[in-house]
Length: 382
Image 1 (tube, rainbow, N blue to C red):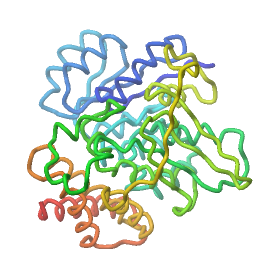
Image 2: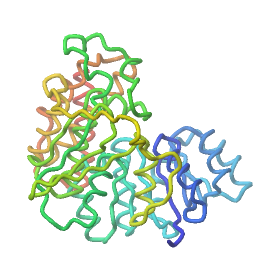
Image 3: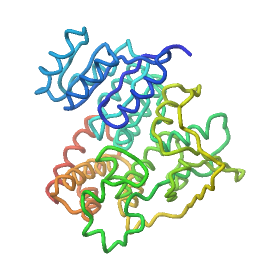
Image 4: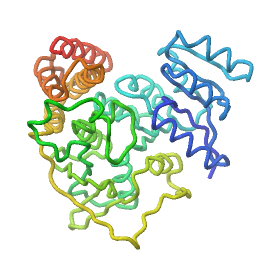
């Protein structure tokens, strides 16, 4: 396997930090080309001094001086501002770009990387949700592979390797989050601390809240639609509290393939970096010598209304998924800032989806406008 130079967009977040752990496990196969962060200057500096990238970007320009003073003496280039991300994502010196940015901010650098023909390990699901048609069209035109990092989509991807046959159904598994067994009438009193306590996974705040509302699974439904080219009605969500089966594929002959593993994001990250090869990963295997209890059942879309809204957005198409994503970002941020009750998140999203201007075939500029409009509408409702 030829050594790969990896650019990590969002290296100080959960996915970015775990990507660096994988690279550290295989220094003969991977090295870091670029690291980027929004405002966590201290961690970015620490990562850069350990992995010696060619360059770093700190998008919070107020932190530029601190980062530059720490890294320039080590011959590491330092850039600042959001405008630097697309340019650095397209650098010729990188073999693969890991898109681990949070939210709509990942779209422009992702497009830049794909337009440059870069292989992409995609962990930023909002990019495909907001601009699935644009992303997939660009990837195909530039022959730039997009390999999913989300555990569910990685599982489907792994199940499809060597399977040229027709797909009957995709099953995305969902843990159900911290409120799986919480009564709907108790949602009004859910606190931020409760919502941030996921039973199985350690993730960033935004993704953790999305898991609690099950919007995360709704985003993944839309992501699966674009990644695997399958009709919305064939993409099913099943609740699987143990998070051992990461997703399943059913073929037209009735056979079902599933990918199983411990809830550890390093496995799908490493698979994306090393594909088509598999590499060793310490302490990653299941122990089948002990009893293994696996449950599967349908989600409650009335209690977790965000999941139903995501299906609605996908079926309506056009710029509606982009509007839904923008409204959800605003609503989640408001909840985390104690400005919105947990139970009101889906209402803000639903009202925004109804009010936004509809565009059936949006281009990049249309999506930027939709994102801004939806954010304004959602903020007004809040």
